[in-house]
Length: 385
Image (cartoon, rainbow, N blue to C red; front, side, top):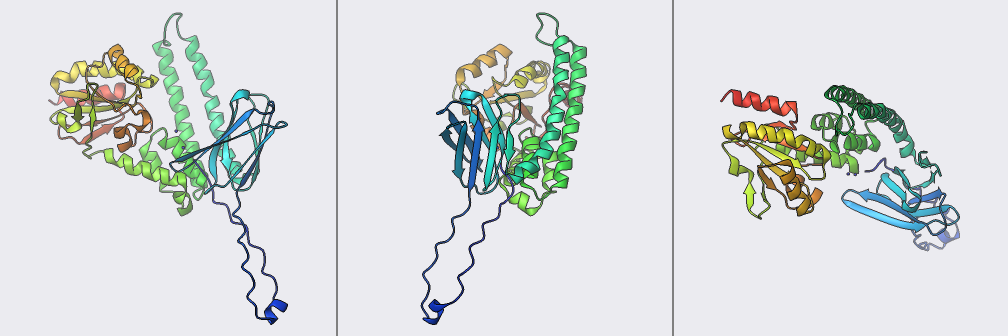
């Protein structure tokens, strides 16, 4: 997954010439050409041979742009114009160098160090400077995840795929603590920069790309008009509007083809509790959760529990193979359009796995239930039957 930053000012036009002889002759002076709107002038430095390809990727709302140039004497350059400060990516595939940063309509310099582990140095972008304060805190949190993965690796018996249950539990608790810490950092940043396009981007990256509707909604309301009007601000707003389509109490409806081409509607399952499960064969967390859903389906299917899988696969063969391998006996739907799956777009699915649970009347009663949460919810529902 998406985005951009603060508005830049236009250059002032030059002062009008003082009235002189031309005024005395009462002639209308020739119209002056308007000064060209300022754009960005990106100068780059990288240790790569002459002729090495360099790419600049950016996006304005739904439109993606990709420009390219070549290295000459260890330098490269791009010129263009942005609607507003935007998140861009500079890539030098042959040299295995990458830099993501905020570009503005002004001279900006990017230096890609020879050491692949060293961060890129960005100068000239005030929006990037503003973002750097948040990025430093975010990086500090992500670095704390390394020791957790190392602990899991050491706690994985030889020949086993996973660590011991005790280690897994400890890791989950430590990851949850990091998640809370990262949420607090994002909240503090948005609250301190309500009029910033960067703040809107933080909401997009932290609570839309990894969906947390309640947090995204809460922080969006704290943004000022300029931040809300920016591309990332509009993206967050669109996410909330789409997400509301599956809010608790709503009655979502859709239709999509199964593997045989037969159109299946969600309303075909009225009278049953239905878990609408968005997943994909390439999604590790989805595949890891599948055994739990299989167990719940086996336990409660006879009592009126159904599952409808909506796959974000783009190819039929791996989709069908995953269904068979994981033993998914329930209805499976897909239009094989990947992230452009029509149902996923309709309901704002920006990450997988995701799900929502509807009751026999077709109303959403819960969202994103996995593991023990799904087990507990179904036990509660069917204990009353």
